[in-house]
Amino acid sequence: MKLPHWVQRQMMRKERIYIMPTRMGGYLNALLFLMFLLAIGYSNNLLLIFTLFLFGLNLLWLIQTHFHLHALKLAGIQFEDGHAGDDLSVRINWKKSPEGPHHWELSLHTPLPETIKLRPLAHSATQSDGHLTFPKRGLWKFNRLCIRSEKPFGLYRAWIYLRIDVEAYAYPRRLRDVPPIEKEVTFLEGDQAGSRTGPHDVRNLAPYQGEEARRISWKHYARSGELVVKEGEELQRGLVRFRIREREVDLEHLLARIATQMVYCARGEIAFGLETPARRLGPAISAKHLAECLRELAVC
Image 1: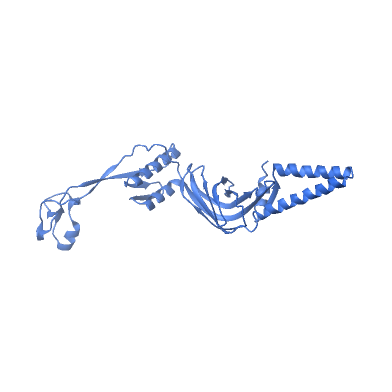
Image 2 (image 1 turned 135 degrees about the vertical axis):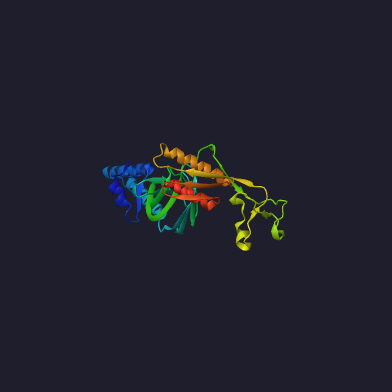
């Protein structure tokens, strides 16, 4: 049963440990209550003693469940930025934790509120590793970490909310197949030596004879005052320009296509740039440039 929003907000106000019986714990408590009524009604002292003994064990199991989250202190959370729909790694570092067994269910809460569950991989006294999946792109901000546990006996469920202030980017979803990419062509001149020799026995340079201005060696002109041109074959290099205009018809599909093509360009060392109504990035080839462009797509 889902509790009202104002009740959940009150429960998350302070870092308190809350405990409720599980289904098996509810059956056990109902059985103990029934046994107590029968012992009182029939004046059966043996049944009453046995009921009180089981009640003491039940209380011990309740205390042990509380201790499983007792003194749990958070040191920090490390996120891995990635695409929506992908499994992303999360590491939670503990400043202080109780003795094992370390088995918790973890979930992150946003102010909206929205909840994202973590799929735990391993727990220890110092850290917990797991995976999460963002359902959609954007800048996700989290203000609560919920830790739940039914250990060590599974009769009671305990949970606690820890206050956090972390954020992570969820890039647009990646498509399975890379769409065709339209490349422009740029030129890098003078990478291979020519046979002509210019003034002052400078190889790879020749006197200016009316060639295109982009072939002029302006560095040599600034140094000597002579107009010379670069010699050698022109090496072509691909360049991709991604553009996002205002009021796109299918923005989500466009962003997914561009994000997929950007990752492909980065892996193939193809220079690319991004132009949005708000910013203009690149062109460049670097992991930092790729991350900056993907973050721009996440909040576009």
